[in-house]
Length: 241
Image 1 (cartoon, one colour):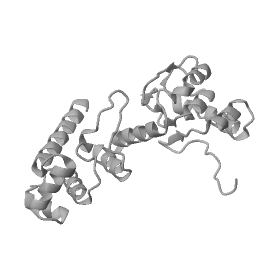
Image 2 (cartoon, rainbow, N blue to C red):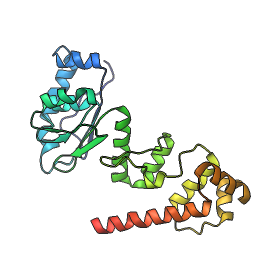
Image 3 (cartoon, one colour):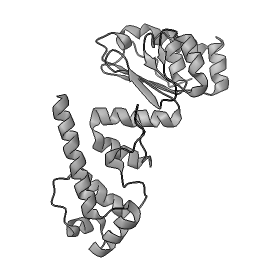
Image 4 (cartoon, rainbow, N blue to C red):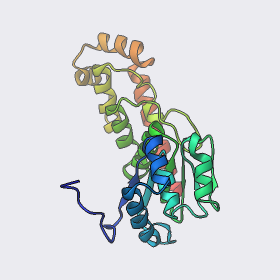
């Protein structure tokens, strides 16, 4: 194909290398050795092996669905905990016999620097992406991305619970979201009902009704909830520092 840049050698500093899945027919063709693109990509990936699996690895390897099968075929998942789509778990284990293939898991993060992340399917890949964004950029940014994608339920590697900063946001009302965005960005601000009503561009009485109906909580209770979650996140950061 024209206008596609060749794969880089070496990888740029601190790269995120993302391997996506393909259709079952495409995968069958690739694993049979009839797909030149698969073979050349596999060989290129194998040449990046040291940069991805060395104990000082600075790059991330991220796979979505059958992308893990390509990573395994390239020898990148040796002795690694990993997962893929439930229909491909046996295939993954065959290609990476020393790997610990985990079933019934949304995604798995492992590797020498927790830099190898594999996910079970397409929607699981979204969960994984939001998890990595939260790790890199913070929960606020991850919550903002999730809201923009209308993906309010975030699942993690162990706990399929709703992210605290996304609770009370499983709705589509723009005025309520405006207030929630403003509070999440600046939880330390003095959020009176009047200030929140200004952010929503509605009256205080109308805002109270909207919050109760769409968020299932009052505006003032939401402010306290967000402040508490920010305090908890800060405490965790201090403990892990």
